[in-house]
Image (cartoon, rainbow, N blue to C red; front, side, top):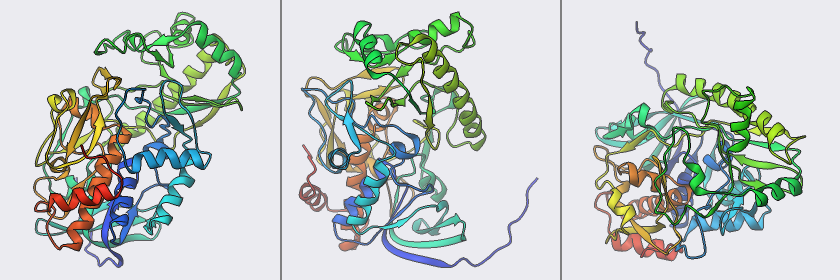
Length: 452
């Protein structure tokens, strides 16, 4: 059964040079990159804060891959971390040479970055449809408390995480089959943890990355990760299943803790892993939110009973929304490959570098030997739509490359590259596909990006 929507006129409420849709690490970096290159920029976000995976989902381990020998990305992503630290929104991360971001306080960090860059903020507006002139996107339609509104733009950046704009604009996209998608997670934090007792137990019974492989999960490493410390939790949940506190068949509750504060807050608990949920299906999202919260409460009870230091702990908060790792990607002008991220690919049209860090699809490789790969401009460009570019985890590539490029710091690299590209495209009145790469790379170097 179908109904026909009546046609209607929609007010154009705003016009801008560059419109960025989605404000996660990729979108926030894209907006800043475009604004610093000298064009008008608008940042559209469906929630009430910028930051996406950091703030709305609660993923605080921004650069947890970084170790002594890591050759890391440079640019806006590092600025996120440094700014968070200076504004009291960062704390040393337990397993790496990095700072965990306080997801709540980072909302203020993101606000400051947006305001300082002169970006027009638009929160509480949901993208619902592109405005098209043939194959060219000229703006979008949003839905909000104000009803339907139109925003016009010379260039559009899709940083939605699910390629919503590209897909609806007619670009060629690919979606991982549901049964193969990387699991979704409901993040949560606890309060009332005895820090001294908890840390003493961790030191007495430390876990390594080899512990990530158990039950139904297998993990491919390079070998060097197997003896490295990981803030991993598994034993409390095994004991809870034996005691009947967790259903016997629910063996996917396990994972990492992020930061433990003197106040007793234990944050970024990445313990719930939901397999077979499609982040582009609202019914799956509904089921996932409810099931994820149910499993989180199992996890908290298990930790209260079987993890020293958590005897008096309780739930502090859930993330605002479920965390999705894997849905649609564009079929780009160039799709990155497993060989690219595993064998230090080099590209003439590099827009930045990222360490050899792969985390997903049962692969875990940490960048402890100085190896890194280039990210090519072409991987941001969708086929089938003009004036549209992508940023974040939706850029083109296969599974292994997605397990690398989906990570938040890498999303800032593609974001800043996309932002600078749109600005140059507008200023020189040239298409994104025909952009002068020398001009783009010069602008990125001016913004502090490491290209090679």
